[in-house]
Image (cartoon, rainbow, N blue to C red; front, side, top):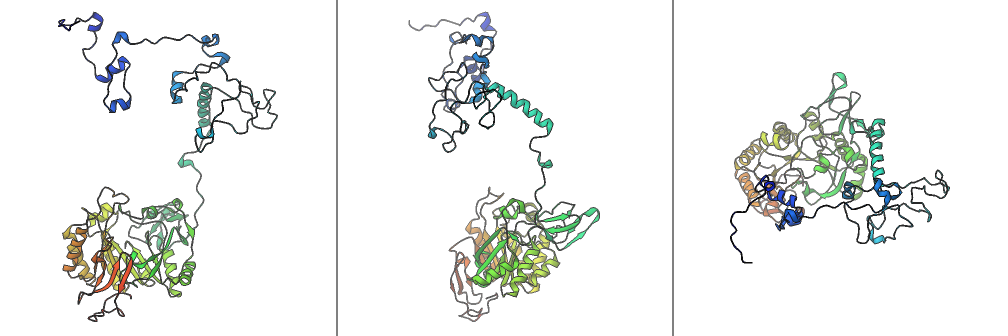
Length: 526
């Protein structure tokens, strides 16, 4: 028939009570045609069926007489709709719902069709061929015995299993047989401990640590912020003496130390722990870990020194984490190495008290301080530290005559301000002199600062220009391979003295620590 204008559509009284237009999702739900997530994402919404033409749900008659009494034949309850949904998948075509207990052996299943490496996790191992499946116990005659000596196993349906599990869960909670909470869990075995230095006893078996400026006050059974020093019965102990978590032979340039025996190797090792938390830490897996959380192995100071002699490694580097928090271990390593003619170098954040620092300076040949920034705000907000004690440490190292180098990681938008770099360069020149090597290194997203981009090379070059303009003689760029800023130049004639490619020395033109062209003395340990 041709289309025509039939005028306004009249609504029945029943339809008049309905809202004129419901949201799309509600209308589709009423029509029984709510689309799948894939269809919704593709915006392929099917047209809803007319309300009158929607098929009505018809209750199917029970297949067996036993099912009319509220269950299936054999006394097995009918599966509920929730139970069918929990199964998470439909039965394959040709396999309708079972009306009673399965007769005969289960259908054969291919090993390839099973999960977890081809093993059928639903099948009990080594079942006898005549194992019962109708609620009988496995093992042959008799409802209460298993002649084969194995555990008696009975088959139950899903509903009975769920009811039993719910009841068992409540009973287990009441009886306290479940796994205890963390607070009630048994204590871990005590870690090997050695008496710590630099602490004082307080009232109520508390102690105050005097190793670093934090001065942690630790109660019985507690630990300092570093996580490796523990109060046991009112005495303070270190948990990492003689045990390291990282060990490797590195080029000395990797520390980086550019004016200390260039081209040689260093036996580098670490124990866990740190007394600050830099959000950009590249070794956070060990520096922010407790001894129980990472693998450790025994390595005595004497064994380390002997290994260096055996392998002709001239130096030992205390590095990777923070040697301040395992001070006793590092001090004993340096003492053992000194007796065998091995040098020790320390890579530290400089957050240490004057007295233990004085011990260090009497045993080690070089210290590299990781300068974080030249503002108190950066130390407080980004590193949970304090700038003042670090500046004091750097000055004391210089005064003690130990070779010193500084490293500043330039983090974009946080410590790359030109005014700050200029102020830092002036402080170094006035307090330490022009010959202390300074390394500006490139930041890469790490740990908790993955939202920032790597430092632009142009920013590092600008920092180097500012420092050299302020009068510093040896300013380097780090984490920028093949850059001219890796090389050592004579401050008098400007010639290349040590040419580097990453951690590799391409050419060393120094002659007894002097420039071969103008005979200028170059400070360092050569």
